[in-house]
Image 1 (cartoon, rainbow, N blue to C red):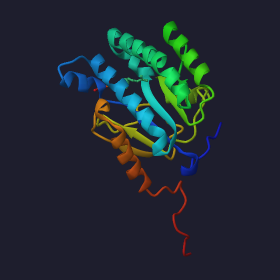
Image 2 (cartoon, rainbow, N blue to C red):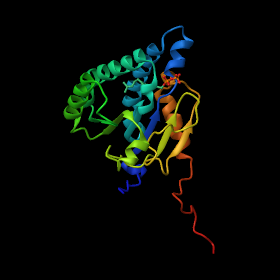
Image 3 (cartoon, helix red, strand yellow):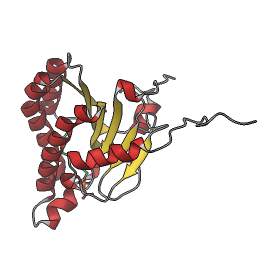
Length: 220
Ligand code: FPP
């Protein structure tokens, strides 16, 4: 089986984000769940802009899990449209900022319009060398592992942040998170901000990462 390499701070960090809480954010404001997803897309854009100055070289985000197909059709359709719209809107900004955009996950169940937007975005941004932005769509880590990881595993995840208060991985990057530091925050995704991300990275840098070894030389 393919072994992904351990990342180091000098290469830049691999941060993974589970962007949870959009639906609750919308409903709490008397809006729809889809309004929450739209607000989440705006937050996502801000987080991508903040990533490189914060020392991140790879950012992988969970946008749609393979289990999310269970949601009501209007929400699923709305999300698919939002993803295509986002890719169309952001591709040139990614090119201008050295962001390479990739989509991980299954491609065989996505709508044709979204597939076209993905192909274009990946082709246009392929030369980006400052940040690798990986968007997980129709993604299931178990499925990827069972298939022998055909969704191109990224480098090992250094820090995984989940917003929205739940404390679980929900089938995201199970292989790449073998030694990830995990951070859970009650903040709903649309309320997450570059300042929150900076705080999360501050907490991450205080953690003692041993990768199964020892921090100090043993005395015996
Ligand atoms: C989980 O919150 C969020 C999603 C299933 C969708 C994530 C999508 C975005 C953040 C939109 C922007 C992304 C891109 C790539 C443009 P939830 O709906 O489960 O929230 P809840 O727990 O409050 O119901």
